[in-house]
Length: 312
Length: 227
Image (cartoon, rainbow over all chains, first blue to last red; front, side, top):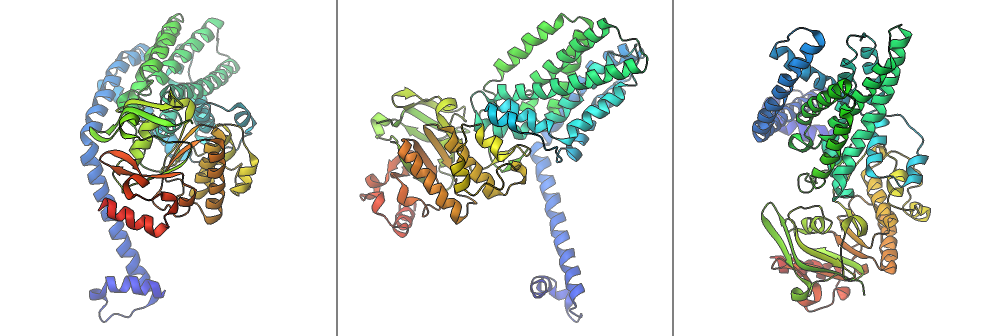
């Protein structure tokens, strides 16, 4: 309390002249003072952050999200048999990204403790670490749960929508990509980008395949007719979407959240629907993914400044 | 003897040239042992280590070890001053992924209790100790350590001294950047200072061997050199 009085009271001396210097009064004054200072600094930080990034983020964000909305318009029309407005298409596209961000923000700090024998014995590559770190998060289970429950409402006329829904897990993981660039750089600067893409792909494949098995089981339990051909198309669509949504993860100003989410969603959806309609297109997606790995091999060097301690 | 040498090695960041090194011209090479890199902030110590580790695309020229071109992925371990680590990976998993775990050093660094804990639940000092272990387990011949003593307590520093001695015995080249060098200065094989965008060894600048210098002499001489 002596410390409080020594710090708080001199700060407010003009106001305190003639006042009774009680304990609660000093605490209240100090709290008020600290709140004012903190608020001022927060606004100052926000203003400077906006000044620094507004052009980059607004411009690129507008381009990517509008491009996504334009590309999604015919897809939504094909699925719903109605022509949606550009605004509706834009809102739908962005709501998908926002939902992923909510999962990431509120649930990615909680984890499941799992056995570690596999990692310790395997001298695992970075991609496995990325994968295991993601799969231990509560957010992943929640995403699978929500995706499967939403997918259960689809019927035989709208099974193709599953290809879009199944991308929710990778959308959540994409928010972790930027900080992982620093880990990757420090661990394996020269081949790290490839490892990072593979890590993302592993997470997406595991979660999407699990979710697809669960949702198909639910459809069958509900009495919907799910033929082998449909299961084959779904598998092909989900694989194609996974490959392309992971493949472009270092595009979009090299993995910046929200920007890369839009790009990943659009390319994953296009590839997924193409593979759903023509499973042979999966080969083309595999080739493109391989090309993306090669093109982005050196992408991380010099673009990710190592300038703070972070836990991802 | 296995040495780390340079040929037309140019270290730059954002168009600013920090170093221009060539072993034949400048006689700058690093033999096995502990090398302290001493310089004020902003002169490019961290940039130099990052360039040697292959992190910077702007780097030009070649780096050789034992007469062969250095491949960072196979022969270099880089420890950044900033620790970015995954939250839900345990210390054991992370350190063991670099190589075979030696529990003797886990014990020496007093990590037994947190060894199987997530990195996200460790203190900063404990995470730093995990990185010291990673460097040791990696068995890499070249270690670039940037401010590795930050956050370590006295017992951990004692264990770190043991690790440095073990690395010296194994013939590894250790380049270490630290501002508070008093704790490990006596282990140093050589100390280096910056002179005209090149590293120059202590004795060529101050005309006395580094091994004979006390901490206060090092401080006074460095302050005079960089004034």
